[in-house]
Structure formats: structure tokens, C-alpha cells
Image 1 (cartoon, rainbow, N blue to C red):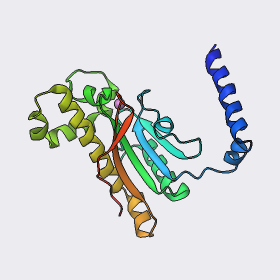
Image 2: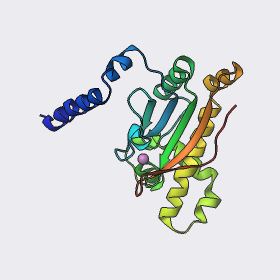
Image 3: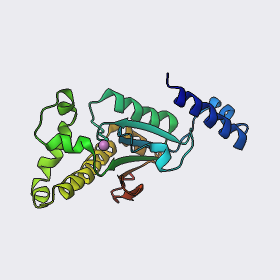
Length: 196
Ligand code: CO
């Protein structure tokens, strides 16, 4: 079972060592990434691949619709470790156009537990109802909601006490918001960076 994946793994590790004999030995010692990526779990948005970074260069947290909910122990644990221990210099919240989680949040259908997870997106919709309802094209409206969701999550991260404490200590740390386009592989910086 899963023979293709195991063979891929062997070939990948062999290629890495061929290019750089000490690659895995160095990583075994420590990780010192400069970036925390908070992205969607969607299989089409693979964090390291999109920004062409190697193992060890990106600390990654992914969930449905790239949320940073201030009561979520999983996200908070990742955030605290990244900020307090690894001392990443940048936190990047990365949404993507065509996000199924964003669409599911506002289509009125009931799916179960995920409806609760997606609740913050419905709040963001409500907070921006006038702007969003003025967009008559449904795809355009959902894409704008993807952007507004990223901005909202940037605000959550930037207002977190772990992040505020880091800034109070004088630690260099910026929070960024990006959105990724599935159709061309490109990220767009939403220019909502918060740096203290
Ligand atoms: Co998504």
C-alpha cells in the first residue's frame, strides 16, 4: 500500500543528499525558520512548494479557511511556539481565491461541525455586508470575502497577547496578509502588514 508515496520519499531524500550531503544532518540538530505560514488545508495550496522553501525554512499551520481563532488551542500553541521559542520574524496569513471553506460558510447549507468552525467567516461577511452585497458576481463576491477573511485573521494574530508581548520585548515581528490564486500559482500581498 502507498507504494508510490514510499518510492517518492526514497527518491526525494536521495536527491536532497546528492545536492547537499549534510542536508538532513543539519536539520536534525535544530529548526530555525524565519516564517510562520497560516494557510488553508486545501491540497492545492502547499505552503513550502508555493514559496519554494526547503524543510526547516517554514513553520506551518493549516486549517480549513486559514483561520486564526483566538480560542483555538491548536493555533495558539503554534503561534506561541513560533513567536516565543523559534522567534520567527514574519507571520503570513495566506488565503486563496476559490476557497471551499469560504463558500461553505455563506451558502446557507448545513454540514455539521464545520459550520461552527466557519462561524468567524459569517461574522466577517456580516461586518462587510454592504460592500459584499454590492458585488453582483457571486465568484467576485466570494473572492472579496477571501481577502476580507485574511485581513480579519491578520487582525486576530496582530492583536494576540503573545504577539503584543513580543513587540513589547522589542522583538522584530511582522504580520502579513496574502492571497493565492489557484489558476496561476501566484500570491498577492494584500498590503495589510502590521509591524508593532
Ligand atoms: Co481553502
